Length: 450
Image (cartoon, rainbow, N blue to C red; front, side, top):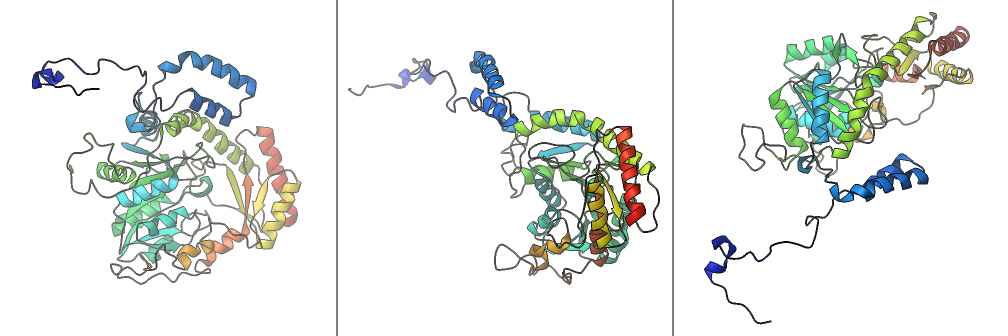
């Protein structure tokens, strides 16, 4: 085919004919990013029968070419489900800013970076929490300082006070197994020493302390909203704050490409806004699922708390077995009732006897089973393990303090409580009669063994 000759007047920009008036292709150059096949994959994941799936496909195939969706929030042509979820959270929790992320660990990382945690700093964490709480401190190149828990099984404010140094940057109270930390005491220490408070609320979403939602009392609140939490499905997390600057920094950390900014390519609007972050963005799929999850949350939490208190109301008092102390009985989520036996052997015996009575219970007792919720098994920290041989942050020249004397027996009170604790699992759907039967079973067992 002979080459054609064109003049400037032939260019469409100069008024000439367009070279491409239309395309035969009906879709964009990226194709249909999510459509019927992806929707059917979800139906299969949900476990619908083959007959139901065939009926679903027959219905949705009639509208296949009308589907316009994207699972990345910043590119979705529809209103973003993640943005809708964040708006719901802001209203529900009464905070100015909410950021959806892809996991609870990502929420911690975004919050720690937002708070300015880094080399040369110490962060106080409890001996009882999932390892992510402390791992994220090390990932930020700061030094974790492990504090005892008290008989509420949350961080002990008295031990926190003993471990504050000139290098301390933040305290991380963790509201474990649905139970609130002593936030009055923690916030008083923070004010006295000018420290940041970052609440780890992975296990108590929707719980309260003296009428305020957990995760809204400190400077930042971190949530895990995944399958194994009281609220959530799949993988997800969120960060709450009332401080615009902290929110902006958390958002920068969660999206290093800065898609969230009004003009993503603009210069920095304020010092500290832009830096080399990571990517923890929540997908539209997670946002869509979490909206109905949070719509159900208040009803579920009311049932859990009501049933926990019904059981406790009918418990007898025993000389050797004590009920976990609550910092706010009305605010506890309520999915776990905890007792402390006289010894680890007694805890094992009580748990076994309760299971025999038909009440689901568990105890660590004398077993040495590894559990990454217990500091003794955080050898990554105890042995100062790092991904590269330099050993940062434990060898960081910016750190001028004295490294904590990490050891398996550094928190003896916490280990004693772990070993003597009996966990009784509360069902939100128990009737009043069920609660009474569970209380009677506990009374029966503890009157003999406790």
